[in-house]
Length: 109
Image (cartoon, rainbow, N blue to C red; front, side, top):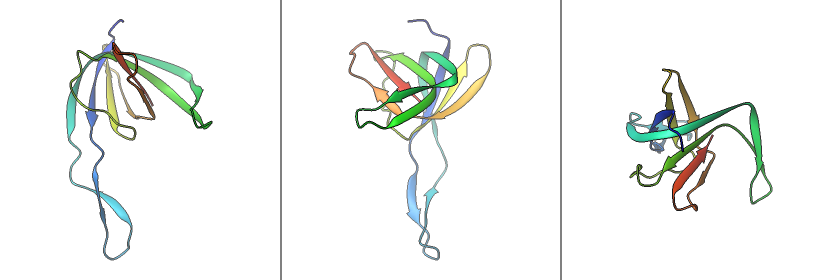
């Protein structure tokens, strides 16, 4: 695997119900945690994948990280800030995670 960037991730914020409107909203500040070096593949136009439930998903970023390098916990819906070695940044929301390989974790969004 080649590394061409690193990432940070933010946990899904806690939701509170607004007593006047009844709607839920995120509460508290977003806290970004350090991830690790990773391989970031960007696809334009977006790639399409059919999930196990038959639903079609589109994503533009495919991120690979070695399990030994990353000690945190990732989940669908979490925000991820991708920082490329060339100085560019992108922010994605995790749409899928594959950690069944045993050597690396793959996320896409």
